[in-house]
Image (tube, rainbow, N blue to C red; front, top):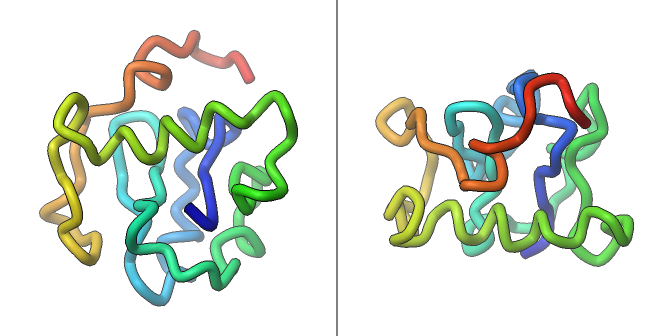
Length: 110
């Protein structure tokens, strides 16, 4: 997975990354956004526009944020949303569901 959205996006969801992404690989959950690992083309545009520095390349993640690779990947799996690989986020793929890590994240804690 080239890019990963981390905890800094929880309860912020600025969405500038959605406009910047040329392949629509960023999906909206209830409390945060998620990057689909099979759809990201590693362009880095999302990282450059994120106002809260929530997006990182997976090979440059700070040690304490490594778990977010699994959070982004597993969000699309059968145990969370079941979205699989729809190939392109749009209004039909917005859901109130979040990965359990995000759903149980204490409000205001980053």
